[in-house]
Amino acid sequence: RDGLVDIAIKDGRFARIASELPSPSSAIREIDAAGRLVVPPFIDAHVHLDAVLTVGQPRYNTTGTLLEGIQIWSELKPSLTREDVKKRVLEEIRWEVAQGTLHIRSHVDVCDPNLTALKALLEVREEVRDICNLQLVAFPQDGIMSFPNGRELLRKAMELGCDLVGGIPHFEWTRDMGVEDVHYAFELAKEFNRDIDCHCDETDDPLSRFTEVMAADTIQQGWQGRVTASHCTAMHSYDNAYAFKLIHLLALAQVNVIANPFDNVVLQGRFDTYPKRRG
Ligand SMILES: [Zn+2]
Image 1: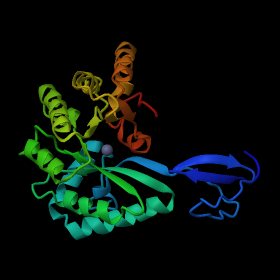
Image 2: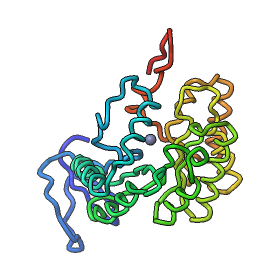
Image 3: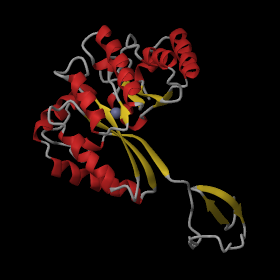
């Protein structure tokens, strides 16, 4: 709208917006925004804080594929220290908060026998509590079923205090192991009474169909509204008949989908010959 307005905020919500509001004596604080733009805080719904500011370490991604990216990260992982992770993460969070972000959901790789990054992030979550709300997702980057002690590490991460359970079914060695990956995420979610946010079908493979498993588990376990499927890029390769069926199922299950276009616009389509898909 045009012109300058006053904004009354009560209990964290915009209570009234008008060209001139009386300043009530009950107002705890009055802020003069000096005519600047006022917006609700931003939400960063998907970030991997443990991996920020590491480009080129130990080498650059020459194929541009997600698979090489994961490989490079696995080469860096053994050398992570709690201090190094915390320093990078705090730098990144300061940048985000300076831009107006108040809520951040970060996945944290738990496929590390020492859980170094997770321990660092748990400390950071407390340290930044007065400037932003940081949620941590226990994220099994190398698989729950395909990584040594994957199940135990994911459980340990929940015991240490992760806010959400993650998964990565399309990355498991076989279709059956991928299904088991989803089931196990739900098992832990129920046990710890936590929401779920799985990386799901982040591939161009049209036969990668685990988002349907997440939706079915959501309905069967009564977890409606508490489940998020992230990336879901295989959906751009599905035939229309299947995509229609899946979208209906996702709506029925009230599963949230978080797409990550800035990420996947550069990662996907790398195995295409010609014609190469766009967008
Ligand atoms: Zn991700």
